Amino acid sequence: TANGARDDSALAAFAGSSSAYVRTCYDQTGNARHFQQPTAAYQPRIVNAGTNEVYGMLFNDEDFNYLEIASASYSNYAGATDVQVAGVFRLNDYVNSRTFDFGADVISVWLTYGGAIYLDTPYPDGRISYSPAWGLGITKTVSFERASTTSSIRVDGSVEHSASVSGSISGTSAFRIGSSISGSGYYDGWIQTFCIWKNATSAAGRAAAIAP
Picture 1 (cartoon, rainbow, N blue to C red):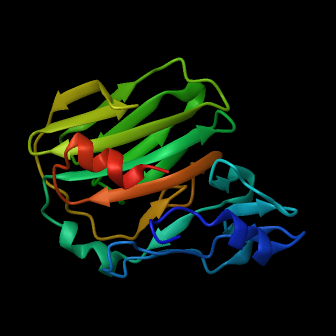
Picture 2: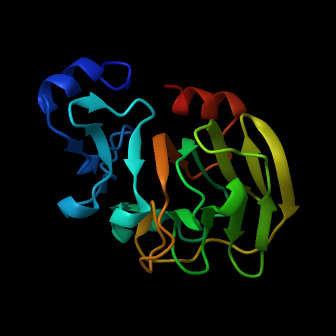
Picture 3: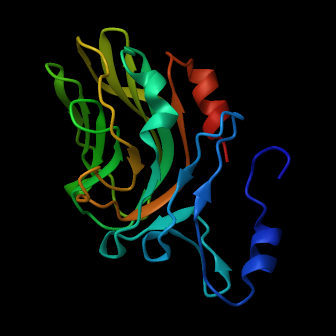
């Protein structure tokens, strides 16, 4: 729609009684950094047999669903110390999943067994984690931030864990949503929306960007 929300009526009309899958998530900033999955078998589902997926795109770990942006599209992240990714998630199964992956020695976000969250940042920064009582079928807004010398995890707007870090982003591989770059750790659940920033975005800015 005009305000960026999903047009459920148009989606239902397009799919009819069939299922529909996501080939491209278009960049809403105008920079043409689109996330794509040209292989039909690996595309996340958005309509199930004529019924829209209420909670967003459904990624199935057993079907190896993921979306990817080419490395050239985010090469300007190299050397950055301020990077944030955020989205609205709903777990379908407890699998050891790498939800976002910028590639080796860069930044990886895991939603893993029991709903624990891990944020891996560039060497020698290491890992920070948050182990919530996050049950299946519960929707949460999660953001993962690297702002100057601090990495942090926010859940529903509250900082749940943070740590001092050093170094900068240096990876050059593609960026995936739904699995690791190496093709393992597939996410199982829904992703309603996601955003990526190359700056220390304010709380108000994050909320506005990922609002349904």
